[in-house]
Length: 147
Image 1: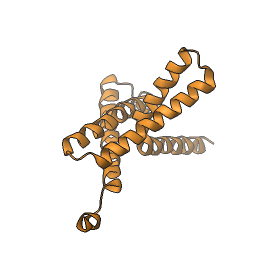
Image 2: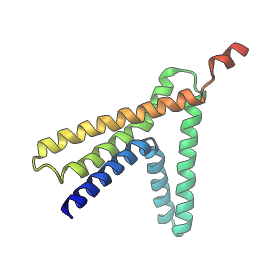
Image 3: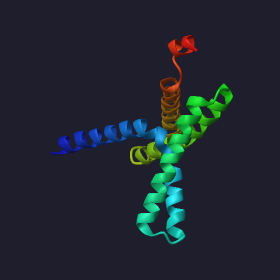
Image 4: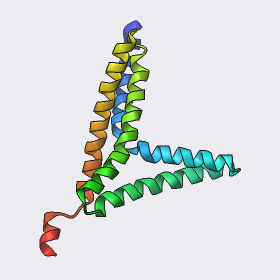
């Protein structure tokens, strides 16, 4: 029974890590959505209004990021948009890794070290996913040849 519990725990940690790497790009829209939803709730919109405002704000943030990466010409501006998406993902990666590691290691120094390595890994993954958004939505060589 203990072996099944250990294997299930490892599978759960693996699933959560996969989910973190997959959804890291959406950290900025989620943050904006939660912030806008909390603001709407504090101003008296109630739960349905707060959920609606948060969802709209998150969708607009994601759409604005996609549009900026797709249509902005200067590479430095695309890099700023990418950093805006990668920075919250890196912070989320640090805290997620730290939440896992603090149960496995007693040393604070090693907890921080492993958490920083996890944050770097999540940040790099998020950067490549954002860069993939830029290449997937940008014009192809065939489109440029026709123009």
